[in-house]
Each structure stands twice: as C-alpha cells, then as structure tokens.
Length: 334
Ligand SMILES: NC(=O)c1ccc[n+]([C@@H]2O[C@H](COP(=O)([O-])OP(=O)(O)OC[C@H]3O[C@@H](n4cnc5c(N)ncnc54)[C@H](OP(=O)(O)O)[C@@H]3O)[C@@H](O)[C@H]2O)c1
Image (cartoon, rainbow, N blue to C red; front, side, top):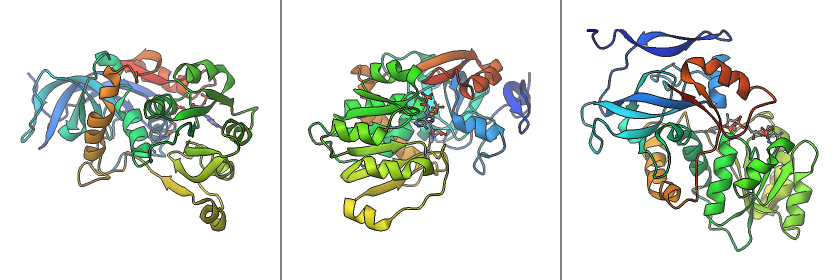
C-alpha cells in the first residue's frame, strides 16, 4: 500500500511546447478546507493550451497540472470541511489539476452536479458558467427587446453566455464562423453574424432601430474595441474577458463619456480563493444560488462539441487549435 504523497496516481505531464504524457504523479493531499475529488471528467480550456506553451503559468501555490474544471466523486474530506460528504458527486472550479485521476479542491469551489446533467458532462460547466456569471452579474435588467452581443458565440464561453443571457431576458446576437451558425442559433441567438464576412456593427444597429446593443461580451480585445464601441447603445456595457485579437488599443475617452459607456474587463483564474465579492468562493456561491436552478428549469445545458479520453488530452488540444474545432466544450473522460 502506498503512502499519501507518493507517486500513486496518474496525471497529464507536459514540458513547454512538448508532448503531453499520462504518467505517474504525486497523489494530492487535502489541505484545510479542501476535499479530494476522484476525477470522472475534465474539460479543455484555451488557457490550458496557453499554459502548455509556457504563456500562462499556474498562480502561485496552485497545482501546475493542467485543468481548470472537472467533475467526479468526493473521496476524502480535509479538516474543517462542512456541507459535503465522501461519495458526493460534484463538479469543481479549479486553478489547476483537473487533468489527473485525483485533485485537491477547496470546498468553496465545489458545486453539486446540476439536475438533469450527467456526471461527465458537469465537468464542462464550472469554468464557463463562473466566467459568464462574473461578466454579467452586475448588468442591469434588460429593457424590453434589449439586445446583447456575444462574440465567439460558438465557443465554450459563448455557448453558455447565449443561454444565460436569454434566460435573463436579453435578445441575443452572436458572432461565430459560418459553420457554427446553427449551433449558436439553436441555443437562442436570434442573430448569428459570420465574423469573417459580415459587419457586426451594421447588423446590430439594424436589429435595434439604430440604438445598438445594451451589452457586448468580448473575447477579441484590441482588434474589436473600436467596433464594439460603435455597436454599443447609450449607457451600454462592454465587458472584455479575452484578448484573442490583441491587448493594446487606443480609446477616445470623450467618446466613452458621451456614450456613457461602462468598460469592464475581468479574469477568473487569478481571483483569490476566498475573501469577499471578487473571490472564487463568492462567484461559486452566487452561481449555485442564481444559475444552477436554471438547469433544472431547462434553460441551460452543457454544450459538448467532442469527447476524448483524458489520457489522450493532446488530441483534444490539437482539435481546439484546428480549423475543425467543433464548437462548445471539449470533454476529457476517464
Ligand atoms: N477572463 C476569463 O476568466 C476567461 C475564462 C475562460 C475563458 N476565457 C477566454 O475566453 C475566450 C473564449 O473561450 P472559449 O472557452 O469560448 O474558447 P473556444 O471554445 O476556443 O472558443 C473561441 C471562440 O472564439 C470565436 N472566434 C475566433 N475568432 C473570432 C473573431 N474574430 N470574432 C468573433 N469570434 C471569434 C470562435 O468562433 P468559431 O469557432 O465559430 O470560429 C469561438 O467561438 C478564450 O480566449 C479564453 O481563453 C477567459
């Protein structure tokens, strides 16, 4: 029998820009307030590809194994954990460690598997739901007929954003590539804009009698800043959550003032575990209370583009980086 802390589990190991291998790793130990989850499935995020390329290291003190979300069964409770029991089926928001047989998780980052969702599919939820919720939780209630524009409406984030904004009463327009039009439309986007061949500003303006979108969720950054401001209605909110199109852009502050723009930007992984409104614990608590019931109400569902065995995660990374990426989330199952 092996002692805890010895090489007694498998996890995905990688070297920067090298291949990934499913190899022996040190079993995690449950710290104070943590549980050990036996992983059933994990999901791929673009951040995993960046971490693998050496551009997005794990935050200090967190596991350097890839994997920002997983689902599975609690097999051990650390000191001071209440409200959870060994045997509970959960999904978890992680700062790392999901591409493994077992992972230590702060109990404050656990969520129950939502009603109507399988244990494996629940792995595709924590990162997308917590990110989207963080980005929209401060929005005012939409006026009747008010439009939100979701960029990347076919991706893991966008497919969840479309559903949640619809559930909150927004009309939704989404950008996506032409081959993913049906995916975004099927989730409730009434307008799907091919970002390669169509002008989203023109289309959003036409759909709102010239007013523009009350909210824009952006994953492109610098390349879209100017056009996002053009697409925004008076008093609109632009929230940037990714910079796939660059980090630096110039902005005319007078234009922001005149249009009464709220410009926000956020990231989830770097948030502290606990400690107030911005913490992961608080985001997860709100998600459980405000978002989770919407799965049972059939307003939300995980969108799984492809499923790959966890030990072959490299194939899923290739797929995510390829022009054939299927849309939705890529799931890694044990
Ligand atoms: N701030 C945070 O805390 C946080 C958390 C999670 C994720 N993110 C970031 O958010 C971004 C989206 O994540 P994801 O999981 O949805 O990634 P994903 O599944 O890989 O999706 C990427 C999306 O971007 C779309 N896209 C690519 N170029 C575009 C363009 N020029 N205009 C509009 N859309 C474009 C793709 O559309 P097609 O596939 O249809 O071409 C796809 O929908 C990533 O950069 C990720 O790192 C940030």
